[in-house]
Length: 282
Image (cartoon, rainbow, N blue to C red; front, side, top):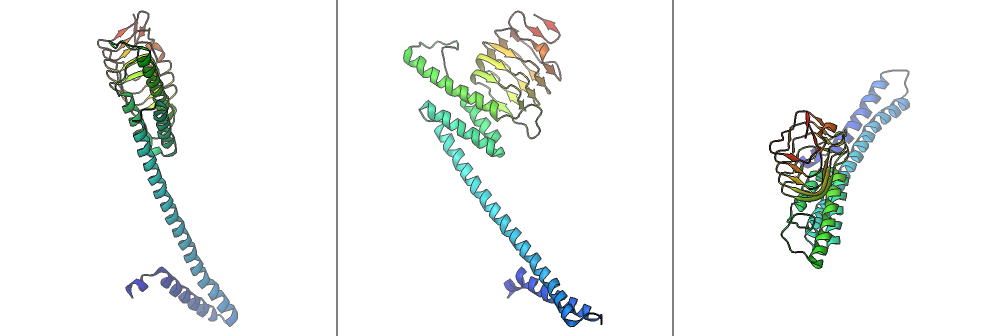
């Protein structure tokens, strides 16, 4: 009985009957209105109540169906994410690259995964890695050099996908952070991208770091980092504190082409001859 009394359909029917009777009775008080017209108008008013209930019911079904689809999409996304993470440990380099592209695709279609995917790609780049391009005590032969080159290409795919996932400079929306501390990088390009917090302390870069037209809205840290190539800061904008203590760059750097909210910290930093530092040249 209680369940019946809580039924929206029951109350809709009762409301329709009440409106039908009420409107009909009210119109009958006017002698100019015939009983047939009064009953017809009352029926239309009562039917309008039933129609509103039908619209509400359809909307409720639609929202329920949308919720069901969203739950299903989330389940599929979670399974896809878990499978991709598992494949990142595969011995075949092409499988690892495919897993990275799967993660990047997930980040593009499901914005809530973007920071997580970036964290995973950064974590992959922090894995131990050696290559003839880095100073090393490793004794290389054709087989080990070939294996190192294949892994280098996989890591370059990760570096490229990190750039692709980041929003463009000037875009609105949540900021995404990068944690590349202790990583060994080949070519890090953040051209025209917006990044929040950026940390790459104690990392080593074989070729270059290119921040052309990049927007860094959070703290930027390259402490105790060695870049064997170039550091390009053309039109880069740093909106928070920049820490470059003990940074070593083997090619000349021009800090004059970048915009800093405050002067960067350069304690113990070393740059190649011809570099232009904030406020002075070396």
